[in-house]
Image (cartoon, rainbow, N blue to C red; front, side):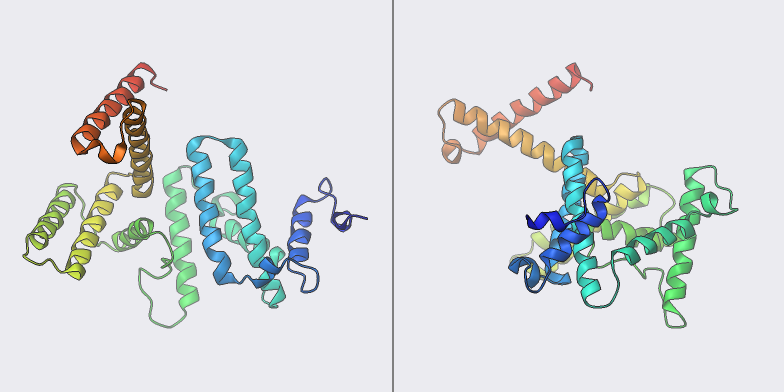
Length: 283
């Protein structure tokens, strides 16, 4: 009999089947050596990677790939829950129950008597409930408006969250002009450091960080997700650079020997071609 025969039938309960697969992989006697060596810390990078791959599938509009990537992300949850169950901390059911209770608690307009007819009021209620939860968790100890902003978040996303938290208590500009002025001020300070006879690496890091933080603040004020904006620009750069490569190699040229002027000319042609194509096909 196949070892898979002992697993739950996928038609009956696919989630239970997945949990059983994970438990088998972590079985001390018959499990997988690689899976058995893993810990929360070693699996965490894979969890982050899978979340990004979900976002990538969504951005590409590939629903078949999205199904697979969501499965990979779900596996991460099951993996962490299995290790926690082995430690006697919690299991997958506890994870599912915890998030269900949180959703009920944070949607009083659906599961309670609170009225919220617009997404803005829903968001306001959500943040107020989260703030109350953070305060309860902190107890009588010192707490900050910035509590709960995870340090492991991508830097751009964490910058947005820190700025939003500060803005809720009034530490923010009401107009766009001073936000733009701050970007220009930080760029000026970076130029000053770069003009030094021997620029200090730590000071440059500091000034570049300040400039990035100011640009993130600008994006927040004009309601643009900086992470999404940078992903979009990364994709645009990749498309145009690949077109540049294709043009030069198609003519028998060597990319490394082409020189910046030739590559810049090919880049501009790729840019114009892309813009022309976009005008011809608005979709």
